[in-house]
Image 1 (tube, rainbow over the protein chains, first blue to last red):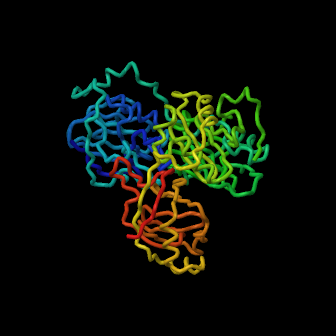
Image 2: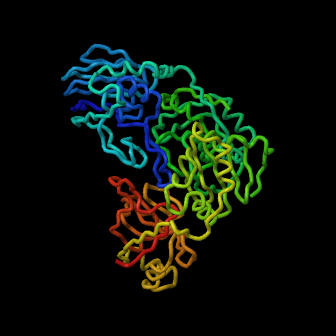
Image 3: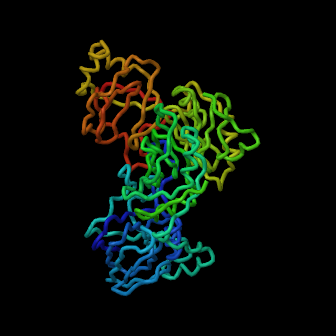
Length: 295
Length: 232
């Protein structure tokens, strides 16, 4: 009942749908950045949508399956091979004992999601196995030679059949293609609590220009480069609660969109908030990718 | 404290604009949160206790669909699931909640044993023109209230009813403050849940685990709790 990590790639993490509701204790929600893709991967293998899977940044991961398994790969699109033969993404795949699964660098999107029937068995904090890169809580990033346990989570319809996903066909969400890195990603925004701390032109500048995703981005925040926004109020803002998707604007005028591992409080004004449904796309944005806000 | 208010008709959605209600300002915060601005930290603590019941988990007294109630220095952030509760219902809850000025009987009291004699105790006493024993007496005889979390899971900013222990942060923060260090900074006292850099004046240490990820309830202190320090 195990998978051996032969090579973890640049960064592979255990993620589920996170631990919401603990911000008052200082804990970020964490969880998969592209939640829809993790849900889909889980449904394809007959898991509950919130089972723990792997979030694989930029490919490079090589796994060896000690036991037979059923897996599905979703999210980013690139060449993923099983024993050297390319597999179909967004589909349940049977894996024989001893098989090696290899993830190429994605051609579209940034993060693959791998679900294994039964879920990844990892330690839980407040009901979630998600790794939180800000606090360091949750399982450590995967290391070479590490063995991953496979859990026994089940949605009740798939136990032991290996074909449980067939029962889920009716409720599978539509497959959302990973974003093309050559095209702009569009995300809807609503007004944030401190929109009135910026001059009139700033909102227009926010929603009319193409921003570029900075390579400094991570699971904590998507940093944006573009023509800066202009804050008119100069007083210091006492730290206040920050929501997922908040566009926090430091004195540089260049916003950061807070993602799953964001700090629960912050001291820079929030001009706008990205709609929750559009955050999945930001989790697939590649450094240098253009981002447009619709507000 | 006044801000431009939209007409009441458009207040149904959280994106509609700010609104004054009972001394509180409700600020829009995307499609699934409100940020409530209050006059000062005392008002925050009272309002947070009113919303949640002191120290209890937010879910105990919040309507279903509320996800987080996050107190900070001047604000309380409330996030919700728009699929489970309408923004207008959240707004009504936030507008009608009564601040709980005094500690209510359901509030938790946390006792923390401290070995005083931290590296900054002498300097702190000197700054406050007290003896070290007087600093310790004042720290142990004050009732502290957990105002809000931040900085690291399990770290809680504690405030008391007087300012006689108000000290500045250290000029040069330490690169490593050990877990369990008890410190003072500004109007706050706090205990470091893990080893981390820090600029607080360290007056003692505790062996209590402020954060234990292996527990179902990992935080020793939650916002709204009352905290008392005793000499170990």
